[in-house]
Image (cartoon, rainbow, N blue to C red; front, side, top):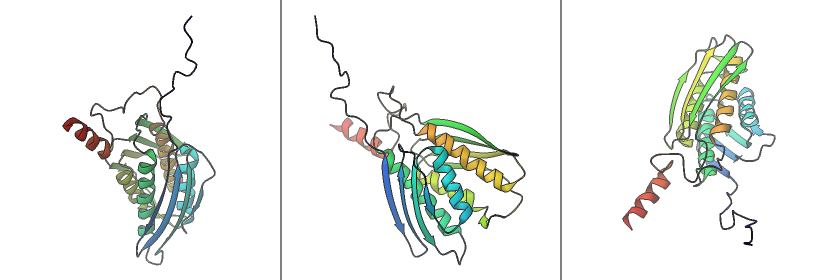
Length: 224
């Protein structure tokens, strides 16, 4: 009788941890950020903008990923530089944490309600950054946070994570609820889109690549 292979995955490299750390310093901001896409843990966030901290914690909590953020910025000017640069750092960290093994679900969408508000997020981890943002708010600030900067954060995140991101507030009256629903919907969609898919033997793309690095690798192999 032939021996049964007790380890059919022998010789197959197990996927590595998907973690990244980003430090970004300019004359306007100083951001240090860590993500762990596979280990949910209580988020530790300090930006100096309380409501923004609350939104980032909600993003990590419902996205089921580890997040640490320590950020300082020229808040005496306004919040724009800080919020945008945290978005840049977070997007960069997500892209770096994904690494080269992009056998992930890729596409996802999610609705999230919060009392009167309902938000929708649709994500494609396509390797190309794009944001469509459709939300109208009745006030300019929530807890001191400048509401217009939510779109700046999402744009920076999408561009640097290289994801196609569509966000919309379907309905709602309270700006706090609208913003929190947006962050929670994004968290749920990201959680699904970034999840590994063990049934895939290659990246889920007819191009065979979901990143510039992969595309260049395919080009090198085709010339050999």
